[in-house]
Image 1 (cartoon, rainbow, N blue to C red):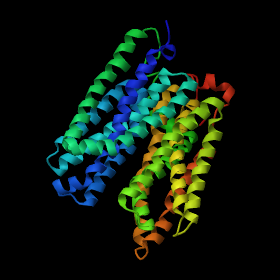
Image 2: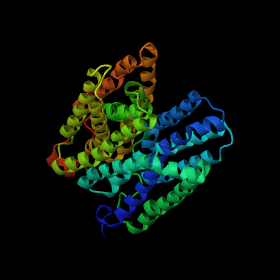
Image 3: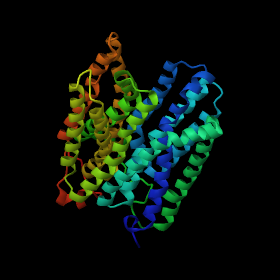
Image 4: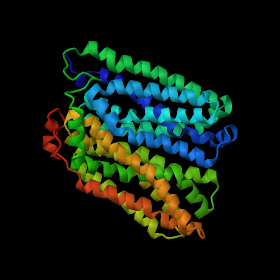
Length: 427
């Protein structure tokens, strides 16, 4: 009998899981299109809306380790189905919300559902694809995320204009719930019949550790902290800065219109869409994941250092190039999970992935707040305040570089063994 990693069916699993991930990513930033409408309809202040967004991402960050534990114990397929369904329900309630508390509860559910997706998508790819395929497909995940973010710009804006914002969220929720049903069939039920003799069936746990043992081993692992630092430095600086302060920076420092500033920030998104597949292809083609990842971190850190060094009168052309490079570094953050697979036992991939991913979104929560504190401390000159505040993402990027330096990597010639079920973390 053909194994899962040799079966053509694995591509059907990939397509279905990526479809859910793409649509869920689009829901992370879609509310940004209707911020003004929500403030008017629900009589909410900008601060209240900001708090609602923060709760959504904080829920994502705090749930990463619990989700990883549940993935290792009950199987990633079940968590992927549940997360997609929860996200669909939260999106539906967003469209039906009649009061601010209903909207806040809806976005919290969206954050809870979103928290389950990425870690379990990575775990499913780990089960269904061989080592080199897995590394290359990490880049495909990045492309799907990029298209999800792009969908939440002009396409959703046009649909909101044609249908209204409530109809858009209700329609997306219907598709998400249908995808949850499809994932139940494609990832869990059908593989049970197709691969009866496969000891590590898709969607099922593989020799799960006791919860206390898994937590103790992961939280006591230097490798786990190093990889969390990697994600902290690349993902948090990109998501936290691009999503909160990049547009205000361009408007204040270069006196750009909001539309022009938003268009320029999209350079970062294009860089991220290129960084994922490029770095994943290089890693699968040449190996030496750590060396490549260290280079990505060095390039990102250098970009922030150059930006800070330009002072209060930076070059717009150079800033545009730096946005592209920083976005590329964020795309390269997928290599975090290539190192997770290389250095952790298969029964710990879920919790290790969640621990690393938590680092990125913890950074995304902290950076906007710290950036704002620095800006508030220099009220006399907004340009000078932004100049000082850029030290925050620069420091975060330095933490990421240190993480990449500390991370360990298995030798390429041992990859076929290490990337299988015999891999063990070198704590």
